[in-house]
Length: 101
Image 1 (cartoon, rainbow, N blue to C red):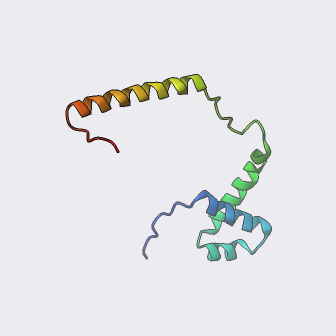
Image 2 (cartoon, rainbow, N blue to C red):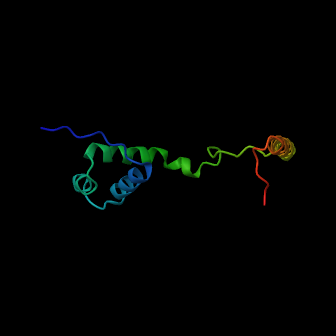
Image 3 (cartoon, helix red, strand yellow):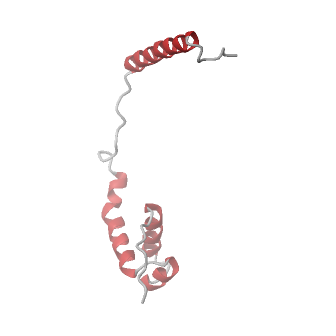
């Protein structure tokens, strides 16, 4: 008997299978055959979906993007512009940079 290669299923696939199980699109055995997974996986994914479903509506659980510091970004842009100008002048003096169109 040959062993199967271990597969890592994508979260979207797991959600699709778990939702099919919740909807009752078929028995666990039928869904396992249809999606080519073990019936125990379907049960586990269904349980995980039910346990974590309330987190979708939880306002506190959402990640909030950190505020952008515009002054720091402008300072970084200025620094990079100076460095680029310096390198461009140094390379053109050394004859390594062709004239830009």
